[in-house]
Amino acid sequence: MRVTISRKAHFNAAHRLHRKDWSFEKNDAVFGKCNNPNFHGHNYGLTVSVTGKIDPETGFVLDVKVLADIIREEVEIPFDHKNLNLDVPEFADLNPTAENIAVVIWNKIRQRIHADFDLEVVLNETERNFVTYKGE
Ligand SMILES: Nc1nc2c(c(=O)[nH]1)N=C([C@H](O)[C@H](O)COP(=O)(O)OP(=O)(O)OP(=O)(O)O)CN2
Ligand SMILES: [Zn+2]
Image (cartoon, rainbow, N blue to C red; front, side, top):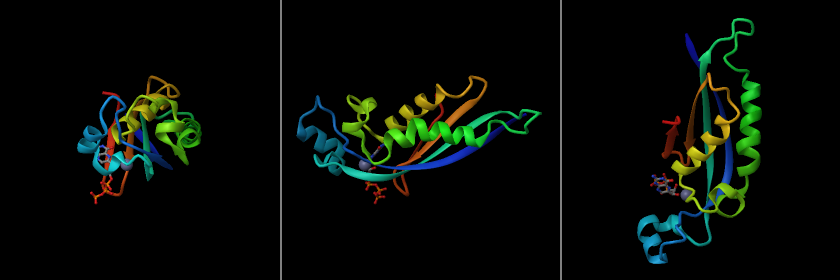
């Protein structure tokens, strides 16, 4: 029997959708207002889900406090109130789209979660836009 536990978090961050190897015109055509050279921001919502067997001693799949600490250390501290393009090394040469941010977050958290567990992240970029990544 495998059960899923989830923890929500959020962070506020600025970004610009842009490729350094493209002209401004091409960036503008593909990314539009998201290519604003002065950046723009989002209130990102994050849901991290861990699936595994219930430990018969504790009744936990994983203590949510442990998961909350991992999210704080791997996502909230490095990303919150940051400019993703300029402040976060993972995006120095990686366009900080919602898709890429979700994959970066998944890879960071995956390293902290035992291989017996499945991991899924859902990143909300706006009220209506969200992406899901589960490492497949
Ligand atoms: N596949 C993707 N498409 C877009 C991404 C993305 O990360 N992946 N990002 C953007 C922009 O950065 C931004 O997130 C979109 O903002 P906006 O158009 O204002 O989105 P809203 O949902 O708030 O606005 P609507 O009024 O609902 O259009 C663009 N595309
Ligand atoms: Zn944006």
